[in-house]
Length: 466
Image (cartoon, rainbow, N blue to C red):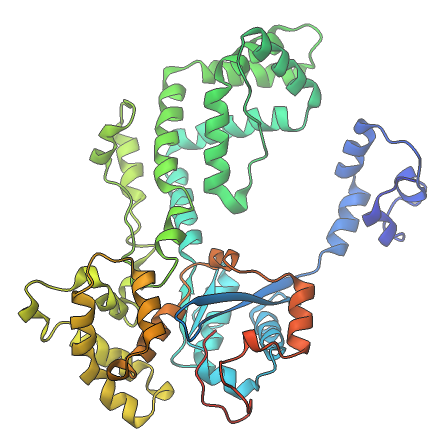
């Protein structure tokens, strides 16, 4: 028996006499496609949507490994800042740690760029700072990159037209098995293999667009031939023929071809995966800037017009990433071995101001001895780092924390804080627990999700970070 599960869940809204509700043993593709677009089905989908907040915890283990786990997929009673903050509280409280304990020890929160999340006054970030003054809130660097590129497209008239052409091509093939079949037949006649025309996804705009550009480039000749046939075909719907005529006219212009290859090159440079990889370990890695236009000379020839040059300039990330160059985040850059000055004698005063600022900022997390010893141990850490220039940062600090040398025991607290900072919400892919396992783990107070050596949850001073 075949039926629409969503419509059956809401019989008062769904079309009760429809076979998609009563059930049938046979469905054709066209009725299914029509049902998906029907008003009754869309109302059922909207009714069935449940707002949820994915909450993850990121912390540093005793051996120096950075662990990221999903705590819970928490339902949100209300999708405003107060409701989301309540959902975060409820999710974190399932870890078996007292609320006043985790709120005292949390050091960073990472969100996407939604106003309800990053609002400085009434958003989730602003409300967290009101209750936890030392917390650092970070706008996911991957989302910032997407926003920067989207902004640049909005500022260039032809890129908007170019984007519309791509969307038209993909919609025509994505929603029509008949057109895909015809395109396949043409490609076989031309002895070419087709790339898949998938859907364009606005939530993952850069990687989705890069796949789109590659598909259009690979399928260029078969697509043009098919569009020409559609534009002139007598058995083609007038609407489809008109769309095909407009698309093929645009695709055959020199400007479209140049932009296609240009955007392929530039989207490759900017593809989403690069930033999270560079920031995978900590905020000690400098924020990457996009390539200057002159650096594109090594790519296939493109005649860059004046408005294209302006588009490239708009793609610089300085404005989008400016908060990462502000204190306290900028202070962690001194922990990058590549920034240490030459010769060794110049290490004497390097980074002293930044370390003092961090001690002051996180003063509520440090005791009197730690506040005194951290600046003193900074010189020893600088020397240790200088002797190991060239090593990967993540491996370097993992080994250091694993060794836990006594003469650096206090300043390593700052190192752990640095490694705990989460620059991207995409880092949750490192180690993810599914919801059911996470629920079971928290009910049993899984020690993997609790501070090492913790025995008394109400009084423990062992540090952990979210």
